[in-house]
Image 1 (cartoon, rainbow, N blue to C red):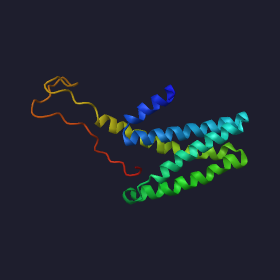
Image 2 (image 1 turned 90 degrees about the vertical axis):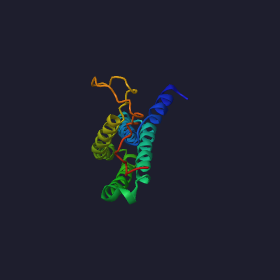
Image 3 (image 1 turned 60 degrees about the vertical axis):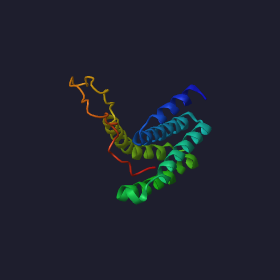
Image 4 (image 1 turned 180 degrees about the vertical axis):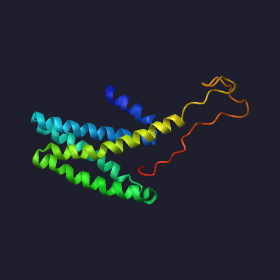
Length: 160
């Protein structure tokens, strides 16, 4: 395993579900930016690889939608992901960066939303100081029973 893959595996292992989804959006956008750069450089193989990677990520997001619990948001994402995948065919068929940029523009607000949710979850998971030790605010924790786990209360309903 390369150092980069080891780092990514470690990041994924410790990430919340929302953080993992945010990371997928990051990777899809990065791959599409790479496809655009490859087109500009005339590197057809790199363009194809990058566009394929982005498509695989979007497809993974699409097939993991929870249509039963996701309601209207999941239904909208279902249509949006299908549109994105169809639109990305133009990148390879016409060696055209515009479809990739269009999909980046659609993914960006979704990426920001998932990062915001992940940040809220990360804040909810802040470690609880051991019993009887000063907390960050200077107050002592209670000696009555175990500390809470700090598990997030936000539930992800759009992906598995």
